[in-house]
Image 1: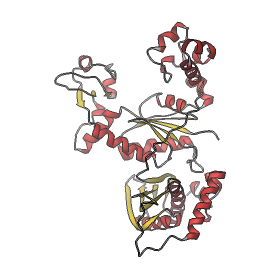
Image 2 (image 1 turned 90 degrees about the vertical axis):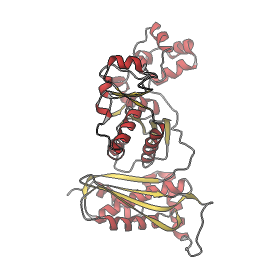
Image 3 (image 1 turned 30 degrees about the vertical axis):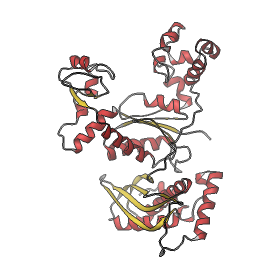
Image 4 (image 1 turned 120 degrees about the vertical axis):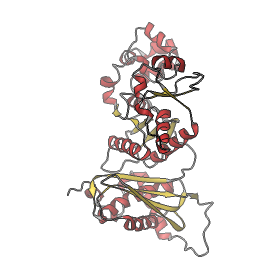
Length: 402
């Protein structure tokens, strides 16, 4: 199966996260709109530029240059200190949001993540649509922007996300390599640095395309294993996996932006069932149970509503979780057109840590066997190969027209 990989990269992360935090604290100015940097001590003018705003970039200010030189380029430059507590908070908030789309997430750095969404794309959607949905949600819910690269492997996704910035989604599929990547300077290829660049130029290699068409044996003779690697990267070859973090997720969820505003409760419940089924599939895959179910909806005016309920006992049952989610939805729903709906299960625990009350009824064994059977069939034949009767018309609903 052809892989579907995303690379999500926060635009000017440290400065953006500082700006969002300052606005939450009541700041009147968004520092992303003025010449500003994150760096060292302004009074001592020590340190380097860690992040810069777009207006600062227009003065020629570069990341990693000394603040002293940056200040000379722009005397009115505003300098803000680093705050890694804030950075970790927003990095984790992004990570949690991305976890609503896949379990296979690799943190490439504090502000970059690779996502393998191959097995998690809802029927009727594409990898590109998922990317645009993530881009919109990050902006609306977290307050900052990201670039997203969409490709069949990690290298191409990373290269794509580095195209025009900020707040962009770019594809770099294998059939687009020659038109989008080969014309770029070889210095822009992942892993080509200051040490290897002069050696490549001595070989007459100035573009990624020229590197791609250089005999692999020549590069191996010159650079060893590194030569083989950059030749493969230049040709879009990368078989490396998205390496997920081993830690247990703190919550698992799924959401969907509807193709059109929808106000028919029955049809919204059908979509909620599809989201619940995928969320519970992931819950069981991690061998976890939940004690809390939450539902989130966004109306046509982009106003968000959310509510959650605690369960009488920890569970991974699709039936129990869906019935609870449906009850929450009915309590929240006011009959207004809905643009987005999501579900999240929280307060997760392993089966070993589960504590069952003396008054709780053990989970229905028939329902448990049904969930396990469906999970096995999905793993064998693909996620969308098997579905519940209540979800059979989900494709019609997702294509719903007024």
